[in-house]
Length: 471
Picture 1 (cartoon, rainbow, N blue to C red):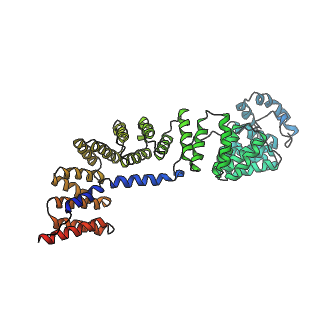
Picture 2: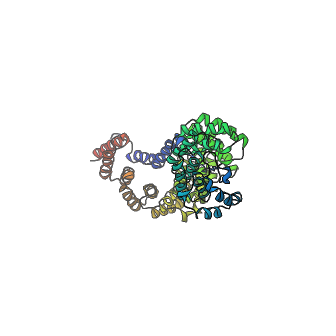
């Protein structure tokens, strides 16, 4: 009789080599998806932009020389002047409401518009200011005030038009350039915004808002080296500004410098940053750099915050997959134990996946009974969890509980992503039972699904030889 490698042993090697295939694939996909550091992002606090309207309502004797009061308006002007000085705008508006705007000069129409703007009654302010411009198209102060109306209403195209007209008419202070830069940035014109903020800084070099605006504009125009240089100077002046450290980290990610991004985020955390998105990003950066301990600590210490967001749960799932692939069982145990305290807030799909990871930890410690219980919980939480079905079936097969094992293999076979591995498991059961013809049938199905599996073809050939020699 010819000597053949025992098909049972050969196939066992085949099945066991696939035991963690799904996890290996998951971990590899995780590594690939994060190899491009630009895909990671840092959530930045939205800055508060404050624009000063240097042309706040003034007593009429101090109105712009471009618009003069009519002689008939002098009495009204003297009446409201003390109210303007005291910033009693309600009383001033009440006085204006007793007049028909059609009879007012451009100066009074402009003042009415400024009063309304100060009271945040933007629609009425717009009408009054347009009425002033109707009488005097080159009234710079009215154009400037009108630009503020449109900025408040987020009508940036209209705001840009009136700001440019203001500059054209000779009013070009830092506020006007800063506002125009902001409007350009909101319209996606980052390069123009850079120029505007630079002009504003030339006129007002210590203004932090213009610095912040220039930084955003440089980042949006992908001028990262210039943004980095500006940011380092800003950090020297304000080393405890959390948002600046977050921006430093984001620039580092854009330039594919993960270590600088990591250190920047760590500094932000020390300064009080606690946003779940940024903690998750920092954990992923630590995984990439090989600092699994720190990554797990970050996620475990903020687990309640993480599980409140499905996107963050996905990050935890990816980290668990990576830890399982690396067989870092203690760290995986720490993370799954933290998750167990928040199971009520985790969707069933993810509870099932985390139960599988916990089961793998139990298996690594030789606690097969506990692993089985966890896998049964995983299947109950998500009947379509093929990894749980296959792992449970493999345990049952090793315990020679063939009927239950076959049941779970059949359930897994119904799932397209797990069909191949399930058929291999069923084939192994048939080999264990010396039912080689059925094992051959199942292996041929695997070969049809995946013709590149030369190991399966070798098993088929070995079984065919064995069957022929026994017949």
